[in-house]
Length: 152
Image 1 (tube, rainbow, N blue to C red):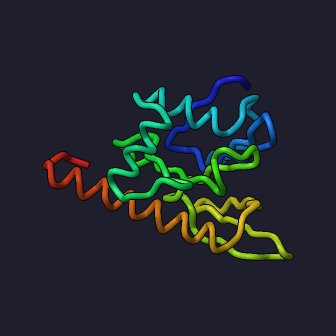
Image 2: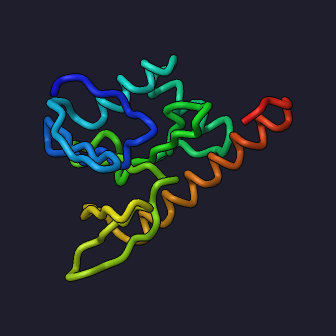
């Protein structure tokens, strides 16, 4: 598969060098693009760029490094990177779909609300911090919408 946009079923984009393993609710497949390019394409599909989304995150919660981004605003589709997005091994996880994360056999697993789980090449502390940032971003977005009396 060559083209893919993040959607409401997307759980994670896991880097495989120049390709990406996409996890959706109920399916897994390979896209022949790096995860960062899929994120960029998805942001553009929904009317912005990844740089524009990063700037929006900074304006809402003041985070610049490893910033979570709002891919699609009306459905609160927010993803966060597992490391610096400049690195080839950076994966992206959908914060609202995560149920838990834990170590097992010296590997960090992320379990999603639908029961699927993946191994993540990151530390517990990094994932914990990234989830907190993503939640702050979601709350700031909801507060901004409610201030403007925009229906969520």
